Length: 284
Picture 1 (tube, rainbow, N blue to C red):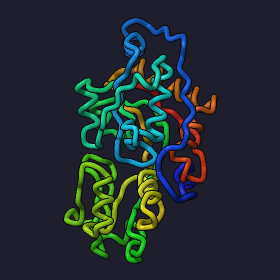
Picture 2 (picture 1 turned 180 degrees about the vertical axis):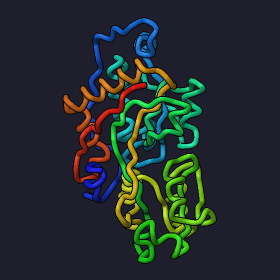
Picture 3 (picture 1 turned 60 degrees about the horizontal axis):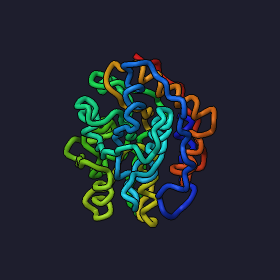
Picture 4 (picture 1 turned 60 degrees about the vertical axis):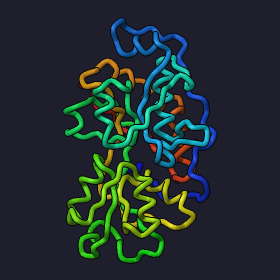
């Protein structure tokens, strides 16, 4: 949870990405025949699923392309395959559709604030984790009633989260199901909070940090993170070789400084500390 502890708001203003350094693109991309890496390197392009509505991690920018830490991590992986950023085909991937797009072969991987858990591992495999977040609460700035998850049930606070997300399941420990509203995207939850249709939005702290930063003082975070959420890269179930390639690429990015550059040009614009790459899970 060390990375979680450093995520206090450090700056105000736009929540878009900074000027990210171009990720390194491998020149020698010889892979074992029949592997996912060989197929993608030969094609010279890759299909990647990410979020389009989450400031700092995956937000569709003015150019029409997504921006954020997830996006930069995805570019680093693509670069390891010898694929330039302009040859990445981005697919918007809300929480509820992430396993589906992988299983259907519509994307080659998903990098989308994607918490690793056992239920999802029944359908897909994960590389990583590349970051550890923690679930917390966002309220309107004038709210003094909600102080943390333990205050939600007694106060009758109306809570919003996203269908198919880990936070939407975690929060049921603290509220009655009738208090929970689910949307497809967190931006709709933020809109509902702004218009007083709900009292609380809950998801991972780094996601909410982006909405707070973009709210012109309308929103704030309350309480401490109450879960650990390791973000992984979703891939086809059982593709051990691709998982190992991704983990190796992440490790090399951490050693070269590319990982830190990806953070500092995106989420690092508002977070005080640059995290270290978490310990990587074994591929299976």
